[in-house]
Image (cartoon, rainbow, N blue to C red):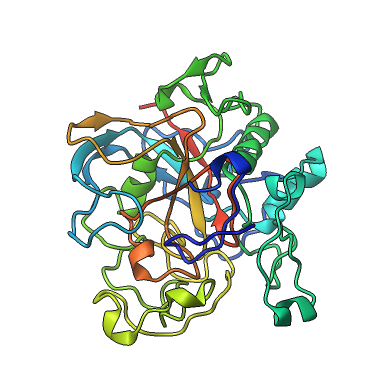
Length: 355
């Protein structure tokens, strides 16, 4: 059965947690702009397909709710100093076409397929023939290869990353049984800098990149005001996924400019990118990060942090097409247990780069 959380996105959990890009041979991206060369960065993949990645030069920044907007779901404060190294990050969320290539090559079945759980449907939805057991290729909305792939659990995203690594002659980044990082020799490691293969970004890397290398910006497109003409989010406060959470106009956040709510994902890259060349860092789809078992932040400075707790809930960032502006802020965080997924849970790919 489904439950509701502050993200206005109905998501599914395993019983244990009832409450709590990039395919080189078949990339389908239109309108990409090539990445500028950055000294010290190697080719992002064995084929040199660097235009699909943003080269993010590391640095130090103040991580957390620097605007004082207040928490969305889990604590965003205290603001604390974080240092991250160089890394690559997919310019786009992984698409349906890319994930389909992985499934065709491997026969992989997602958590939604191996652990199906029915969601609540209205009588009208049942009559209309909506699928009570949705999955990545069977939604409530039409999609094509250029939409972000969604209805994915964290485990599905990391399995894709490992496959992508093997496709490019790289060692896998994850132990798919434990969720641990693996180094180049396949040994478990807690140090993200020792991970060679493709992976999900750490929470710190994601926020650093969304904020254009740590600038004080509220949204992942480099803007401080959320507008429907620049992001795919619930600008009208309609509560697209959970109508009971609709926001009256007088209660909308001051940084939420009223506008259209599309109520579904749109093609990746439909709006201008941020200053680093990253698209859809706010809105469209939630994006899984590598971290798990997180609660509040420590006030102490951290260097290349990745929080991991076996069996802990995993972090998602970025907000979605059916969340309002508060969830789409670059500091907003939400955590879901193993196996969880929703109509807007997707991801993008990262990779460590040596100094």
